[in-house]
Length: 218
Image 1: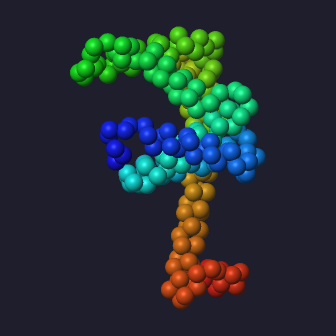
Image 2: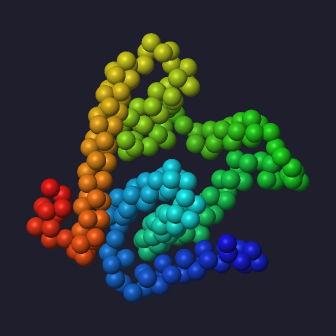
Image 3: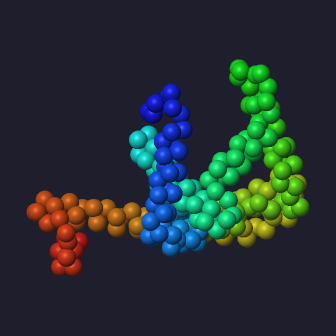
């Protein structure tokens, strides 16, 4: 744990390091939001892996990698004169304060969870002023989770069950089955790779050539 007497200091240092890296006009300044997008996705999945593995130290490390993406994208925007990391943090603070009215009271004890959720959703709805039930849905997410989200939004808005296309459920099930089958094949191949590497190391081979892979993977 960091020094409780200096909360936020490592975070400020991380911002400073990002600025210093940017000042060298190296690889960092050649990047764009789009070129970094796949790193953001990868780091998010690594955070999820750490959560599933129930490994606090690993989770801490992966959250740091995810934080780097926040700092990086903010620095790119800063260079373009759009916003900086302080704007990102200020926006989050404003959102939390608006959606959590109890923060502006003298309340210091437990609060009613149902009331908290109701206030959050009500104030969120006021902020967004959405004209459609599908506004705000991340359309770039995987198809199965996208289908689940759209159907949930539709049902929450009162769309009768019979008006939700059955094909959504059918295709989602088919895609999920295909994904599970693919994951099984990937897991099996990954285990073969690990076994081959372990056998190679046991025989003193650290860097495997084409022939080594053929030998140990056979």
